[in-house]
Image (cartoon, rainbow, N blue to C red; front, side, top):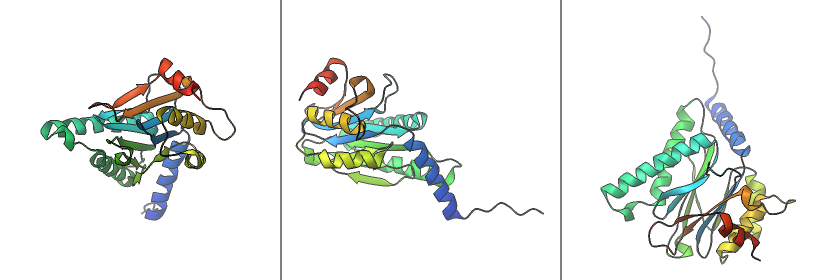
Amino acid sequence: MTMPFYVPPEQMMKDRADYARKGIARGRSLVAMSAAEGVVLVAANASRTLHKTSEIYDRIAFAGVGKYNEFEMLRIAGVRQADLKGYAFAREDVNARALANAYAQTLGTVFTHELKPYEVEILVAQVGPTREDDEMFQILYDGVVMDKEGSTVLGGQAETVSEALTERYRPDLDLGAAVRLGASVLAGPDGESLPADQLEVALLDRRRPRRCFHRLKGSELDTLLAAS
């Protein structure tokens, strides 16, 4: 009788975590910042159709890095949950914290019980009436939820980008300054700022009454990047 193959649980979890981290690091980073006009999302992304950022609900946005088909599936599930809750109760009852907890449960279950973990990091952001009311929840591949304040970095070379962002981020940034900062830190320490055709930029605009998500592109993005 052959003995079953045995792997210590702690080694199995470590191997899964290493696998997920390597997959996420192969992608390009995304930064999120709370600015005067709202929450600004800036991603290194040359695709015009495969988006890393999108609307979840009225004042809530989703951002993901890593394996596209996996975080796209999570995005769709979040939209459905938000729509159902808003329809069954009230639109005001849909919030980023509840969605982040739901995502954390899903990712944690997959990480623990499935053969392969999801190779994703996601962000759920909600814009408030003032900058102090903005909320950003970063959810890791294993279901860990982190409440971020001010700014955060997802995926890619997150440590390097995060150091540069922390040094240069200020709470009083306006939209243009936040977009230019994102383009600069995503380019790396030795490169110039990423051009508009290499960026995906979105804003949760606190000035809008209900649907706050706005994608910045074309001449609007060119103007923001060119301003000094």
